[in-house]
Image (cartoon, rainbow over all chains, first blue to last red; front, side):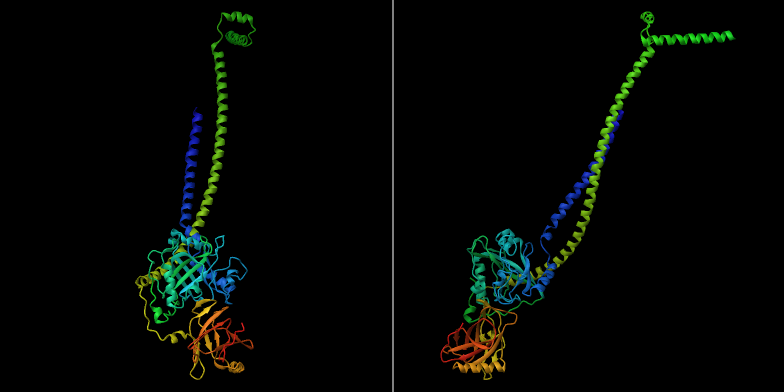
Length: 266
Length: 286
């Protein structure tokens, strides 16, 4: 009896005194790891702006057509912007940033846009591959929650850094903006601004507080790709320049003839 | 004395032998005489009882030993299990310690990156606030600008004079690949050789050379361009042909419109242009 009791005491000490405290320590360590992982998720997904310059320099050394770098925080859109040096607007529809044939193409602007980002509206094209690369995630901006969460577009250049505030996203006809509107005149700029503010489009989302106020003096960026919701149309995400670190973005706004000046917002 | 000793020894021997006899009879059981004798006599309770008790105690002890061995084996097994659990937990603790160290390093790195991002965002927020203020103060009414005349405004590049007071300049916004563009075409005076060649060619087609310029657009390439040139001395009713020196040949380029002091031309490349007033509009060869 005494022996049996002694063995029981030993068992109690071994299990309760040693095993349980170790289990508690183990569980606390696991929960702390999960908390830390959650806190850092946002940074794990995106590459931070400080690293973009390196990417831009690398691609520019390989392809002089790269003149800027595009980055949208919280998305996978993180890539060079190119303009074909031969003036062929279709080249980067079928070639990647290394000038290799690629059906997904590369992110690019047309020859009519200035590559110093000083146009009223820089129209940047990209495809929407099914693997989610390129501009595929632009279509997510039709979701209000996603739109509200993603506010900025960064454009890094060799000697400047620009920040655009995303103000609108919608689906429009598949006509070329630079052909449809004459952004070289204030009247053409105003027509496009009227299109942005025009109501009656269920897909259109405009940032709260930005429902009015755009002027021909502003600088816009339009990211465009094929719409996945409405094939045959294009998805556009429009941003307004808010930050120009080097202060180099400027242009003369041509109000043209007297008659043109009278064109106002709808 | 000797008798006393002898008697003592005898008595002891006698008692001893009696005890042995009784003991022998008890164990064998064959001593019938003893048994008969014993039927009337009670065997020594002390020895048998003791032996029985001893036997029982031995059995009990044996049982206790067996149980103790069993308990010991069980305990050893549990100790073995606990040891293995302890080893496992030790390993996990070591792994957790390493993970923790890595996470601390990553945290330090991310903290640094966060600081630089915050700085960048601060700049962005300040810029945003600055533009938001301008944005909110914007009015719907268009602004009238006190600008130079449109001719002066649209002459964005160096106008090239003809030496007689006339000049050629970019007279309007160009179209590049079908899109309206702010690209500026730079005009410059041709070389003497090109000018001479232009004059000869103009004479050969029965026309008069109005102006000759060389175009360029640094940093901009195109497949097609539509350029509005300000060309002094031109009126809307004039027949104007434009030729471009491509290689060694003057090739006629398409003129899309002629208005007072303006000639709009389709180009596919840069090069010297000769504006020639001709008797009749020639057909473009491409």
